[in-house]
Amino acid sequence: MIQGQWFSPGADLSGVLSVRRAVFSREGDDLDAESWNVLVYEDDVPAATGRIWWREGAFRLGDIGVLPARRGRKLGDLTLRLLLFKARSHAAREVRLCCPPDTAGFFERLGFRALPSSGGETEMFLPGDAIELDACKSCRKENCPNRA
Image (cartoon, rainbow, N blue to C red; front, side, top):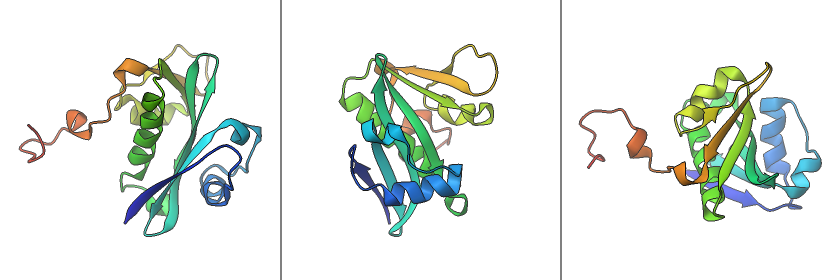
């Protein structure tokens, strides 16, 4: 069974941090005090996480990761959609994130566009009115019974 759980700023983040440590080799930081974190469980095991916060006129996403042993099961996609749902439910005008260049395609599938970069991480943005959570709209399967 797949489940998601939200953690408000100041909440106990032990499950979130266990995934963050395994994926990014990082502990908690000052940003946790102002971020909402989501934790996705697979069979009651913390498997994926991400966080969202408000800064400089935009919602920011970060630390979106899935445990290596749990990858390939669409848990990262679910985590990103949960974060985007949170942004949309708060009338986001824009969502931004920074990611390694080799992961930009993951975010582009949901409409993120890369900003010009001088190297290092890729900064990406998504206008709030372009947030699309319907997985069927981006599905490439022909003859899918879920397609209208």
